[in-house]
Length: 571
Ligand SMILES: Nc1nc2c(c(=O)[nH]1)N[C@H]1C(S)=C(S)[C@@H](COP(=O)(O)O)O[C@H]1N2
Ligand SMILES: [Mo]
Image (tube, rainbow, N blue to C red; front, top):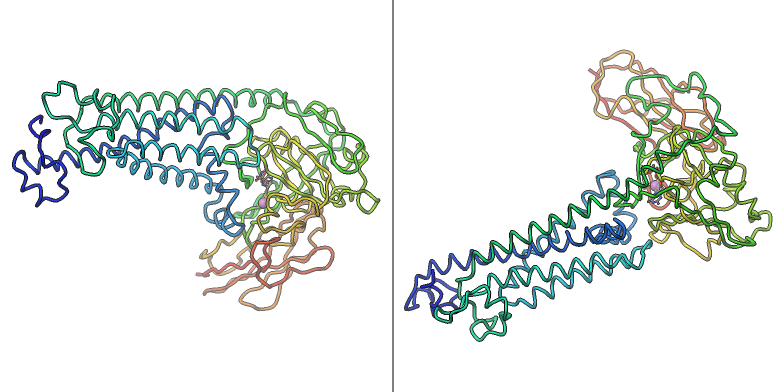
């Protein structure tokens, strides 16, 4: 092995040149060079692991949202145009975030391998590359709408750790000096950067011998330290979450001053395949931009209410809200990103503080009553902003600051400790989760998060109907086939649902009992199915008398339109 290290043909890049070298075995040298390249890539990967592990540890001391992958992912989401976000939600559902983070890690790993290889010859360049990634993380963390000053630290400190790791590891891969210089290769290389040495000018190739044992030891140490830092960071981070979970456990929601009426008998047909009338919390759809679900301690949570037309700011604690007269209501939430026939709608029983009462108490008047603010902007702890018309909040509907969902304190995923719920409006203009601030302003003065990304300022939920059963491409037997689903027109109510087969005459479906106009309604029509392929279509009419338009429109900018249809083959 030492014999090769004084091979003068060290700068050969081709087999032909290598064959001309007077001493040593060119193929062994090539093998070592290849090994060194692989190990360089490994050094890069380990450096990235060190950066991420240390960043995880630092972010545990700050908050999970400050961790680099989360910060970069959040920055990517912020920059995602409406159509792409919509595509991601549609195709990956709630997994969209998992795919995004995996994507970021894959890209990072590829660059890390490349940087490790570059560092074999240009160690400073490799370190500079790591620094660039650190800067990217810092910029991403700093660009998030919910940024805190300390959010830049995990990326910055992580990058330092990554750079140090790359420096140390690539030093171990530095070419050995000719025998007789008396210094063990690794140690000497560590003491002097590659480009300082006359025999490694960074251009002319290098001697393939290097300090293997030194590298293996350093690599193992780096891997262990990275994993240790990462695991410790996770453990510490989980502890913080545990405090929030304990605060949630300790909550006993009081009996609402205004309970919901019992769900009427006959509100559900019980047909197999039909969505249950009440959506259980664990089945409730989830749509948000949060890569890490915020876990907030209810004991330290505060809500600030302020802005145009208010004499002074008001601050509420969680207990302040619990002491209010609470209302309990069944309300069907819907996402604007729901395609015709899509799954992003759910019906739950919410408990909360009437928002109109809170605003009126603070002196707020609707625009129609001469109030200066026409927009109520809700801000979440994770930087989401959601603008709702003040007029709508004060028009008598059950807009609320929800504390409970289906009899329990809100789950973390659905906005604990407090979220907004406004019947009749799509979630992106009403249903702010993890609420922390309510500001009275105007639509002229401020565009909320999704409005800046191409969605409408105002977005009442459009009348919709969905066929739940039979499923697309089902093969029911000829004879009586129940066709059933749900229809919604929140705050207007559903008056009629019709079904047709193969473009034939419309048949009026039976409607299940109505709970409230703010909830969806089940419908069913018994079809005398004949063998062959058939297309089923559905349309609903709301209580204003308006029937769903057949015209297909996408979800951007204010909700999809068109009739849901399902193709089946009757056997
Ligand atoms: N903080 C925050 N609140 C949010 C969102 C979000 O991304 N962040 N998404 C909104 C959207 S688009 C919808 S449809 C509803 C979904 O509420 P859910 O996840 O409880 O079903 O939350 C709304 N509130
Ligand atoms: Mo949404």
